[in-house]
Length: 103
Image 1 (cartoon, rainbow, N blue to C red):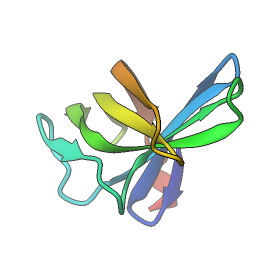
Image 2 (cartoon, rainbow, N blue to C red):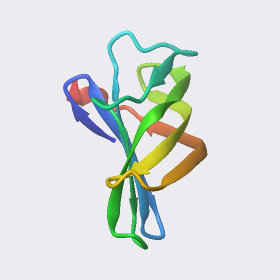
Image 3 (cartoon, rainbow, N blue to C red):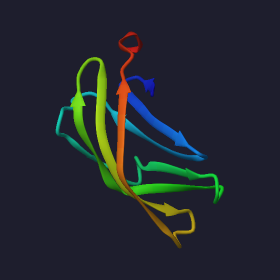
């Protein structure tokens, strides 16, 4: 995860498929739900299609947040640039250690 001020970027990759999204950290608490929207989408990149997909509906559920880690689940519907296809992303999970020296 990369820090940009109080924003962290959650990113993961497996076999050419990558998912990423940003979380605004101030005030974030355990059990919060954070929605994806056009101004803050989830990103899905598929090696097979070579294109970027945007998840503008769905959410992140925060399971744990403390000074050392943020952990949660996510789901979203990714739409292609041409909007002719939708890929559901379900049962996503992340656990990101926080670099306290970056604050």
